[in-house]
Length: 504
Image (cartoon, rainbow, N blue to C red):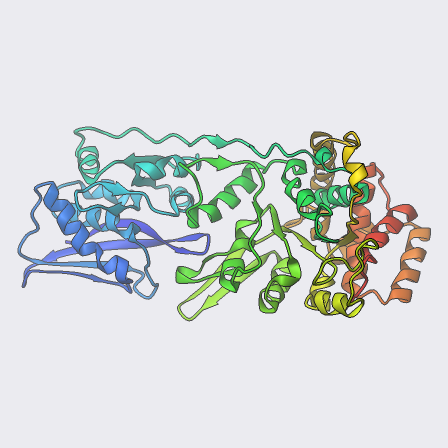
């Protein structure tokens, strides 16, 4: 008779159910695993055999066959150890079969029978909850999985605890969710001296999740400004926190099961590969753009990134999702992020600095910024120049609003947008509005429309650029508390669009 246990196989952030079937039949002693297992899954037979031996459970001199169904779906990872052991224990009638069949299990077995934590406990709990099953996992993964309130999570330290639990000798108590990770950034926008226009652009960008490009000489404060963006963004909602944490769970970035309400802030180095940025590598893991989901992707020294890496950003920036295609995997990850890029105006960095003029102007700047293609540049909603700060200004007292004050305005503006798009699926912010919806909510008054038309004709704005100006103007109006988009809102949005103008 076939005994069954259940686990999951990961396809991006989606956990697909896998039925682990075990049959113990007469024949030459053997232990076979079938169903497209990878090397780690195939090696589970040795880990399971040794772990059971540590519990004084000897395998019978019969043929043991483990089938991972559906058989045509690749199975990868060491988390199949525990469900294989459960199915085998049920087939040997050591633990009751009906209890095992109501459980989704994942976990890696050590040779002494202890359970080692694995990645993906959070999406596995989501899948278990959808099928009304209990999740069994290692103790170190329990706090992470327990955040899914609809799923009962049982966390065990070893296989011996699992056997005692199912036989009723010592039932395990359900796991508790981990602690919410506090925000420890502590960086205030008021620390930045001067750069009032850049601060304003940062606020607009954060309020509507608009993409921002900052150019300026070295030391003008571009990186300092970007580092303060997390302090002005509102905390993740419960749904956003779960979405983001599922991606971080697959990447193994959740610390002791703690889920953060702080929006991700990822800042990859310009030597990062395409697989590191977009995703890929072994098992098609999520890249930086997916790890920045619902948060910020800051790319310093933007033109220094390889051209192929920059061009791969064009589609994810538009659609909010990326398909990682490999020979043996096609995985889709969400990646709705705010792209913030910083760049020097030229190779030496002093093209726009009158005190230290570039000796190769203007060719130096054209060659350097020319590494950013027109179509990619067209996707930035706001482009600002960050001028150098005079050393005399560094002694001036702090001025402007604090990050807390700006964060309050940003949160209020985002709530206005959430209320506006409450009945629209897939749209929560102005940056996501398009088509007829954008025309309806962001259509300017007669004077604003006339101004935008003149600028579009004079500077040859692309259709994408035209619509991005409307989105930014709508966000500026929301920050002001205006129900309609007026001429001065459009004028300010255009001023950010035309800085370093080079539309495709």
